[in-house]
Image (cartoon, rainbow, N blue to C red; front, side, top):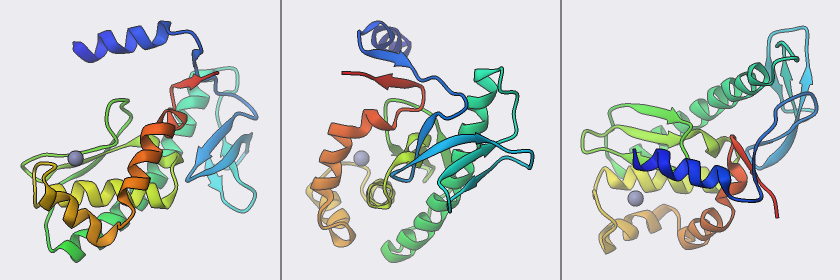
Amino acid sequence: MKRKKKQKRRQLRPGVVPKAYGLGTPVLYFDEVYTVVPTSAKSHINTHNQTICLNVDWQNPDAVKQGVLKLLRAALTTKIHERVIAYSAYYGVSYNTIRIKNIRSRWGSCSSLGNLNFNLQLAGASDAIVDYIVVHEICHLRHLNHSADFWQAVEETIPDWRVRRKWLRENGHLLNLDYQFKK
Ligand SMILES: [Zn+2]
């Protein structure tokens, strides 16, 4: 309820417009600008020429958007699983589920049941940022708070976590998949 209200307010703010998806749309893919292009093959991401190749109905912007999001979700899911497995082994913690969600409010979350959630928008972020969020949530498996002990655990593998947190606070809106923020 509260969130819905907030979304409405942001939509009305000047300089914030819904992100348009179509042929040639630039999309951030792990900190690099990719371009949306057509393919007659199955939709896929080409890392050699930085393109997001879609086989969709181009007359339908929502189909294009969903095509992009589906590929980003698959790529981020693979990366997040890989990083969670590595860092949970380092910290000696076990987790329950991993989910990827396209939400605006948080980069990640960790429940007392060990369920880890990550924001789909991280598909546009650098590996350094993805790792910071993964480590942050993994450390919540030990400390369900932001105590000094929690940050000390984060610092073991991410010594410059402050820099990465600051980057997210200042630039995180650039990763938004639903809205564009114009100056
Ligand atoms: Zn936290």
